[in-house]
Length: 428
Image 1 (cartoon, rainbow, N blue to C red):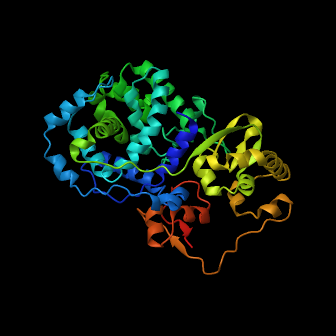
Image 2 (cartoon, rainbow, N blue to C red; image 1 turned 120 degrees about the vertical axis):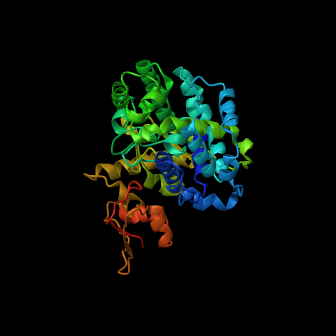
């Protein structure tokens, strides 16, 4: 499995389109369901979606999965889980059943994408998990963490497929600063996640507790153990855990179940075509995306999609060796014009005391290169603004005003999907 395969996968993932599902029956499942859907919604208006969505004919499931699932006896679900060859116990109880129902509901129109993503991600995950001698079934944890979205960012700042917090990511060797965020790099973040989970297992000697600690931190697990009178079983310390963590193990077991037994619930997804082929080159000098765009004619948004770890449209190659992913057809152009891109990037960076990445995409490249004043986009007097109301998301606001999440974020300089009540957003 090579890195260009992963990036082709990311492009595929962006072709997913999703609606809103019914609310699960318990609060923890409801919160997990909202997070799951939001991680998809953040990509609905992506560059690759707008470019390739018309080429894909996705599954449309009309089956009433809730009703059908409610007819399945507990004994059947429990036996299926026991039949899986896993090291981590696949416990079955009412909490797990609630999460299975939730995932079944949400995946009935998403499973085609999830399975296609798995075909590419899972070999990467399995290699890293085996390297650290941790159970292979942990590969399903990314469904719970990020819905396998490498650009997912949580409300508290966790980022990437494995949702590393800043401090934990740094502790496990991931570079995170204003320019680069390796929590979004699939290979490096997966290696760090496997390492971290192995360390947590060494602390607790129990896979359920190690996974729970991955979610809320070992300190919270130790507090729950103490409050329970020293018990060291997840289900025995369950009442003493943070609310989100109570649902974490059930959600993991549910995701594992769905990815293995979806045919038994009448789901027969079609595979989604991958229209984009990419390759990777290592860069050891500074490169600005605006000059890669100028010389290779690759759209800035496509560059960002294929290289999500670079936060400032800058590859800081001067400080080491960093990967750059491009469509395979453009790799020859990059090699041909590499020196020109390097020189233009270094010239621009050396003449600017502060680099403002958010303005790069709006620059007139020849003027920028010649040191002239940049042309700024005109903001018309009839701009439209929206005041954020309680419970609104960027997805809802974009739909209301007939625009896209990406455009709203661009107009307002937003780096994530997080918005607050009362915030004034420009939507046109």
